[in-house]
Structure formats: C-alpha cells, structure tokens
Image (cartoon, rainbow over all chains, first blue to last red; front, side):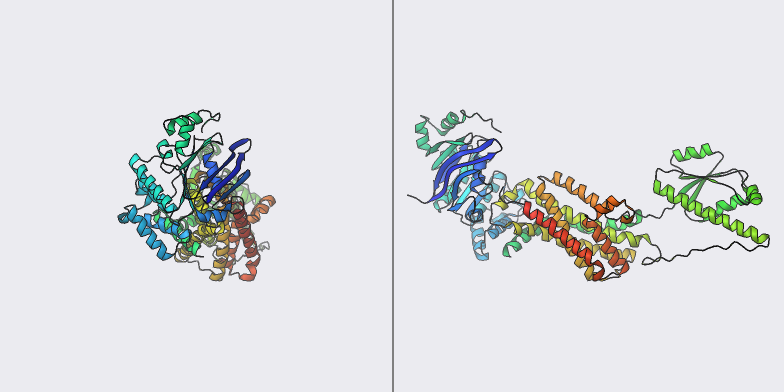
Length: 247
Length: 372
C-alpha cells in the first residue's frame, strides 16, 4: 500500500449551529491528483483550510504529510504548498521578486533559488519578463506563475483552491500539464475545481454535499456507480440532493 | 534572522514601489511644520473692536488711541448706537463692543471715574475672554494713569502701587513656535508611522496575500517584525527631517541631548506601531482600520496636551491623558528640547512608554493568529 499523505477521520468543523464540515473521512496517497469537488458552500474551502493548518477542526482526526492538524501545524506548513482562489502573489512586486520572496521564506539557499528561478522562468517563457510587475501579467500567466511558486520548495503536497477559475481553456490545459508534471515529480496534488472536465483528469476525487462526502473514487468508478456518461451527470446527480443553499 | 531579512526586503520593495510614499515621507513633515506652527498660534491678535463713542472728547480719543496702539485691536468703525454695533457682531464683523458714555470726560474730571461698557461676542470664547481681558487691562492702566496725573496736578503724591514684572523662563521671548514645533513633530511621527503600519497589514488581509503568509513557515513574530521595522525606520527619518526644519526655519535647537530624544523616539515608535498592529488585527479592511485608527489617533493627539494644556483640563480628562502615549512624548520633547532636561528628568516617562510598547505589542501578538 502506498504512503498516505492525507488521512482524515470523522473530521468536522462547526460554526455555531452550522456544520460547515460534517464528519468527513478520506485519504490521499502519495503522488495522487486528488480532486475535491462540491457546489459552492458545500464546505470544501473550510475542509481545505483545516488541512493546511489555517483553521482548527471542531472534532475528528487528520494528519497531513504525517503531521497532526491540531498540534503540528508549523511542521505541516513547511511541507505543503498552497495556492488559493484569491490571487496569491504580490501584484506590486515583479516576477523575480515574488519568486525570490516565496523561495526565500521556504528556506531555499541562494544558489538553489537562482537555479530554480531560472528553470521556472524558462518553462513559463517568462525569462524576458522578470522585472515586470505581476500586476501587469495576463491572468493565465499569473496563475501558472503562482502554481510554480507554490511548488518551488518541492513540497510533499500542494493544495490548489480553484486554481483555474476565470482562465481560458488553452491555459487551463497548460495548467493541467503543469499539475501532471508536478505529480510525476512526486508532489501529491489536492485540487478543488468547478470544471467537470478537470475532474476527470484527477486520479481520484470526492464530491462534497452539505458538508459531507457523498462519493469518493476514481472518475471511472463514480461514472459507473451513477450510471453516468460523464462527470457532469455524476455531479448533478449528487449536488441536487443538497438542502443547503449555495452562497 | 534570514527570514526577517527576506521579509524586510519584500516590505521595502513594496513601500518604495508605491510612488506616493516617498513624497509623503519628505513633503508631509515640511508642509506640516511650515504651516501648522504659524496657524496654531494662541496669541490673540486682530480683535476687531467696534466703538460707540458718545462723548467724542479729548480724553475718550486718548483712550482709543491707547487701545489702538496696543497692537491687539483693530478699531473697525465708529458706530452711533449700540444697536448698530450689535448688528456688526451678528454679522461676525466685530468681536467686541466698547461703549463710552456721553458724560465720560465730565465724570472723570468731576467724580474721578466713569464706567464704560464692554460686550464681547462669546461664540469664540477664547477670543472673547482674552480680548475682553486685554481691553480691561488697557482701560485699567489708562485709568490709573489719569489718577496719577490728576493727583500730581494737585501736588499730591501718587498712591503707592505694586508693579508686577515677570520673566519668562525657557522661552524668554514667549515665542509660540518654541512651544508648538516640538509638539507638532510628535504629531507627525505618530500619524505617519501609526497609519502606515496599520494600513499596510490590513491591506495584506484585504488582498488575501496574508493567507499565503499564514500557510507558510513564517513565524508570527517574524511576520510582525517584518511589518514593524520598516515603519520604525520611516518614523525616525520623518522625525529627523522635522528636526532639521525646526532648526532651519524656526531656529529651534534641542537644549538637551539629541541622543536622549532619539532614545525616547525609538521606544515611542515601538509603542505607536504596536497600537497600529493591534488595530490591524481587529479590522478586516482598510476602510475599517482607517476609521478606527483615525478615531483613536485624533483623540490621542487632541488629548495629549499638544494644543491645549493638560493642566487646564478637568480632572477626569487629565486622568485619561495618563493612558495616552502621545502625552508622554509631547511632554518629553518639550522638556528635552526647550528646558534641556536630562535622563533623570524623563526616566518616569521612559518607563511608562516602555510599558505602553509592551502592552500594545503583547496584545497584538496575542490576538494575531496564523490559525483560527
């Protein structure tokens, strides 16, 4: 059996009477691309924040990269990468300044940082734009840069919160190529998305409804279970059972 | 330490990328120090005095010329009736009315005295009060001169009088700028560093980049230090520029030790920045934090004894000023710059401001959470 990067058991998060995350259990193996699906308000972001060490769970157990989400958040933070749906680079810094900053805070040495950033800029075809402010880049480029920066320190796992929102189909395709590349390099990927074509690119995925995980498995398994031809149908099948209103 | 350097480099890159900040740091102290001390002058001058002279005698004319030559009053118009003069007060054209009765010269000659009427427009209470008292003083002086002259005329010795002479210490020419400039320097440093630090952190919250910081291995004290140090340095630069202007424009050179002044400044800035930090941890966006910081800094400045003397505040207000860090710096800067006070004199102030620094920063660090 493969090494488990995320293990969640009966994880819950309650805000007052509202159960944002309701008793979810799942695990993610090393090297997997795990899709974390759900309608708006289903509790995805809350669950993800717990796993990243940004939020304490109300009950249940979870370990990320071998560390406990209650007590070892600082160790978790050293071993993960994170890219949020809100844009996560500094818009008023240049491309190179952003790379140096984020590389630096994850403890990359000078030489390592230099090699990494050269390599990264080459792959992204940004070598000529290093002194451009991130603000002036097109959204697709920003997102690709943000992803590259999120994995610059070769984390055990990278969390992507709707990374391709608002991006054109071609750039999305390129973005997913980058995700595959990262996965091949041994980085586990945990991704939320609303695009069902992207869902089918995942090696395994879960669908959350009303704070609970209602389905989990590979895309092929889920389609078979729901007698569906594509992931869209699976998603509709489950999401329409929601009683909670989307935000 | 390496982490801190990385954070500081990023902060300075951001601060200097913002084209409006550099002029703000340099121009703001210059403009404030050039304009404020001149405008915030408590010497009441140019009081417009409406006169109704029913007497029109040599002696009433003499009184008016004495008043006119005092330099405090502008004798605006010769009214014929009190009603007319009152109308001018209502139009805000006149501050004080002086009515001289028709029998003025006769009564002075015969009875040795008479009454004049002073009415002041008390909407500006300070101007009215001070103006009326200036006027009374001038008239009293005029009065005793008449008496002395009259007694002399009869070959009698004047009544013995006690003359009061005063000397002003530490500010011998009673130059108001000496008092205001150091205080305004404090205000400047407080506003620039306090607001800038608050807004800076909240901006990261608003844009969402703070999330990216919170999922990283940056420790919270490192992050907060990275935010404090740049504005601490900016505060010191602003103060230095201000001190230069005080010297160049107003000729004010600190009587006491400059090193002592900077020592106090250094700790004071930590306290003010800690306050800014605290505001930023309790607010979610720049609008909120601007409002909250503005509210407190305004109270801090108005209740610091900068513009109004703490000693003349009611006891409850005096009590409040003791919980205001700005009060201490205003006192210290005046003590050191004008009186040349030394370390022993400001020791208590220094200890108090250290207390403030620990309190605000401790509270802010306690409230700031990487994980909620």
